[in-house]
Amino acid sequence: MHPLAIWKILALISGLLVTVCYAVPDADFNAVDGPNVRVMRHEDGARTFFTRTPDNRTLTKKKFTANGRLQMLTIYRMDANTNPIGCKIFDASNKLLFKVSYGYRKADGQLVEERMFDARLFRKDPKTGKETPVQIVRYVFDAQGNRSAPIVYNLLSGKTFEEVFGVKSSALETNPFKENASPGR
Image 1 (cartoon, rainbow, N blue to C red):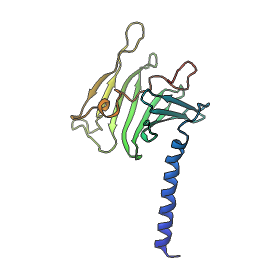
Image 2 (tube, rainbow, N blue to C red; image 1 turned 60 degrees about the horizontal axis):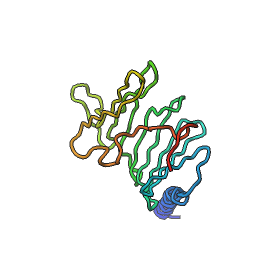
Image 3 (tube, helix red, strand yellow; image 1 turned 90 degrees about the vertical axis):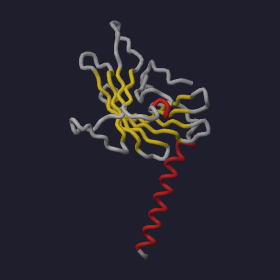
Image 4 (tube, one colour; image 1 turned 60 degrees about the vertical axis):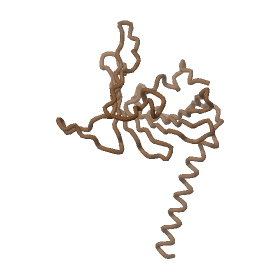
């Protein structure tokens, strides 16, 4: 067979596989929660699917619009205590938009900071030569250990993360797989 024909066949097969991968969540849009799946139903009809690996080290969050189209995909990497240590945020076409790292206080393990980096463009701090985040989210705790609302530092001009995605932060408010968590209706 001609090499060009083989290339075209492989491209067609890979395109079909990508289509099938994105069609599976749409077909499973009304899925029931299971041991490794949680579904959040939002008031506007949108849904968010949380899927975890059996070892609890990866949590995938897929947000769908009310009509079932994938809006955003977030893949969290978790530590041994199921706290996120990093995540990658993709748009509906599976293009990597942001990389996020999470910082915890050593004394009690509380989340104190998120650093969000633009995955499409390396932004270098001229003083240190290191990559500069586009957004930093910090949390302060009161004497009772209650976390404050996030303090958000946007380091770029233009639209904020909240304006684009509708939330202030990429942090998980609650782990949807903890027994006392209520993922919503």
